[in-house]
Image (cartoon, rainbow, N blue to C red):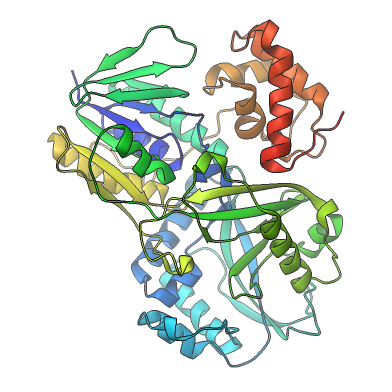
Length: 504
């Protein structure tokens, strides 16, 4: 019987690792206490990028890795990842060089107030970014005066230049995770390896065997994995505690909030690309096109609470709206334009919390040598580097198991298998039931937030929600008597967690 790896956490990193291991013929059981993508994956800025600002902290290898993965995802998953032009508005010709140099040598604590990056500083950073991108198919950076054709109409009384460059956007990382798991299941079948994906499941470990209890299943299952990987992101330390693994604190998570705005004026202002700018406190902020909507984020605040309960505060919402109007005063964004807000917790390594922006975005596998069997925690990681993280983690596990690498994901396409795509509602009931059956759907929340992406549909209504609940009843995912309560629970969650009101 081939070895089995238990992966705790079904977000972007857990799903990518499951796929990587399945391709090598390793048995995989991936488990999550909630649904797929309920952590940082669903609450990110939805960018596939090299990390332009990482250059100031000297993380050239991370930028190079991220840019290489950006190119790979644009090629292998074009239905998910698409090029995005970004503009950096600049006020002055000079400024920011000294502070950037101080960040590079870790002496920026001597600077107590934010300093605007001038044209020379921005151009130097973009030139380095272009160079690290190598033979990228995306255009190199350019500079244009404010008001030039095919550029956003930023405040001409304040800004003088717009520096533009390209990165990429992944609008639906939740759908991407489903595609990764579909490919993992397919690869496991090709290799004759076991594959099991369980959501809403609790894992208990006695040091030898793991017992899984899944919601809706009366009987628990028990098995002895050969390796355990803790890929629970911001929950890493909580998971270690639940498994009785003694380890120093691994994570120093920070909170990031976003707004989704339904504003025709803002979306028109972003016709030619998004904005990457500085808020009044020097914090980098993105204002991005998001389908027919606009996405604004993010904040960066230390956070020690339960990641599942994090919600954008009124101060954060006001901060992001002020930033939008600071950049684009003609848009006049208000609270009425906010379709919803969301907030997530970044799975960052433990570090000095006084400067969250300076915490590294690197990733690694932390071995827990005192555990009774091989056990690792994934520290860090982001959407862009999910594949390379999984590749490195799989190599570590394969070496531990004494198994050879059989295949590479560097050239393996990632396909969308859904019979319908987000934004295509109303779809046929057959298509919707297919999604319920094939995509690990358990609850009404799963459908609304992370499969059909109806959370982001301005026309989403109570009638649509009640219809979906009826289909869950038909597919035996929901008791008929519990249908009204399930509908009300989703409406309440959307209101309290996202500030999202449901029509009707």
